Length: 187
Ligand code: HEM
Ligand code: HEM
Image (cartoon, rainbow, N blue to C red):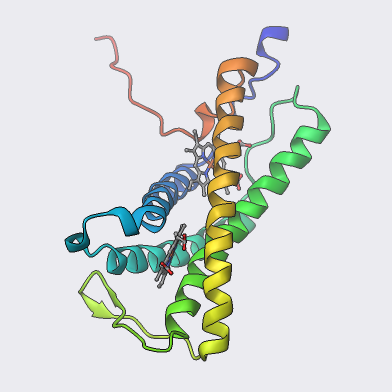
């Protein structure tokens, strides 16, 4: 049926969905903390949270990448042209690279700082520093800023693409990565 050309009936697995939305929420919050930490009230002391959450994102993203390499995502809607498939794949692999590169550059930056501040996981246990010096720390600082902005820009495109699929193309691209909500069964 032409009206259903965009629907495959395939869904992401529950594991992939959980990974996607847990990491998405953590990254969006951390982008906000990173971009606006200087304008937040000083007594919020947000940077230790930013660092601990960022290292959590790094660990989760490495696990997710491993998962992704072992699991195929559901097929694209059949009506999707080849150029759009290529663009989507490129954008997704770039997002994986940024999900790892951004927190890693942050960790390298604080490890190579001239004066190291304490690094811990939400005050529960200390986190190690990476064995790098100030020259790596300086380069990582630049990289963290640049990659952070690149992530914000690519995410904007990613979100607009998801909304285009849902609202304009009306295919199941967005729905298949949303957690399935239970509907009440008739008695
Ligand atoms: C920090 C935030 C986010 C990150 C890092 C992220 C990352 C990703 C990645 C890497 C994939 C590819 C999954 C695969 O391997 O197949 C993906 C898929 C997807 N994401 Fe996100 N995402 C984020 C936020 C969002 C948001 C807010 C939306 C919705 C408005 C969204 C909608 C989607 C959709 C619809 C897909 C499935 C695409 C497809 O089936 O081809 N994402 N996301
Ligand atoms: C999801 C992961 C992360 C994201 C999305 C992120 C994003 C950002 C962004 C956008 C900024 C502002 C850049 C600027 O305007 O200068 C920033 C600053 C910063 N980030 Fe991250 N970050 C992440 C993880 C980390 C990690 C793991 C660390 C350290 C362990 C870290 C340490 C810092 C520090 C110290 C700053 C302040 C730099 C300055 O003001 O000079 N970040 N982050």
